[in-house]
Length: 279
Image 1 (cartoon, rainbow, N blue to C red):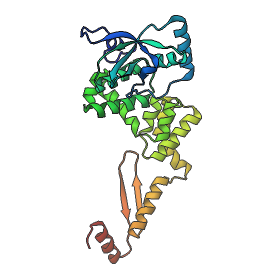
Image 2: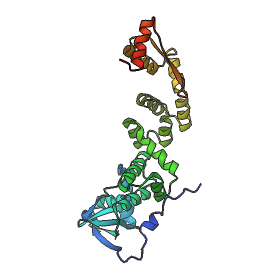
Image 3: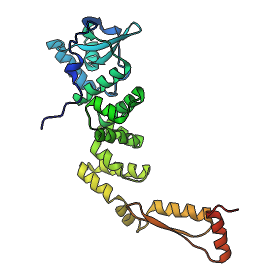
Image 4: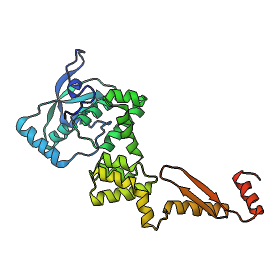
């Protein structure tokens, strides 16, 4: 199946637009600074070494793209090529100098990395969030700029709600986006961490992970003799606050009921005053 291309694409980014303000020149490698809006956080050393070997034999086929600000050049596209040039100790590298706003830099760097499939889901999500924050645009406008459906963009942003350890697992490739999205259906951070640990340990597929999440609370009730530890914890807290027995009934679809017990009319009046906030 042919992969859908996002946005205008890298070809459009480096195209010779008839503005008269873009120019292709050789720039000192040491005078270039990384893209401050680079969504990619991880650069694999082995991949950079392989790219450097290829550039040493074949040269650089496609120039990097930079913009100039405060007498410095900042990368927009081609950070891996720039890093490989550093490994090769090149003095200069061909670069297309263009004029961009900060919003354009963020959007183009994000599109280029997504197209090359060089970002993990968390990096994409963080890049989208930063672009929304920087541009002040809504999800639909940013989705249009990136060539995404709004639902796809929203699903990426939802991943940012995951606990830090789970985000790291996605970045490290221990679980993928499908696993992470399934985990979002769980009620608490601890439940998510517990389920994620099982998925990683058992090397579950996405479908198996979805099944684990779907049956998570039923399985835990069986493992704890029919008692959900979270329910027990909440019952104990309410019992302590009200100074009387409390029973909490909760179903998987979010419905339930709360029973508050009393042994006399005087106790009922005390509880009524607490619950109705009467003094």
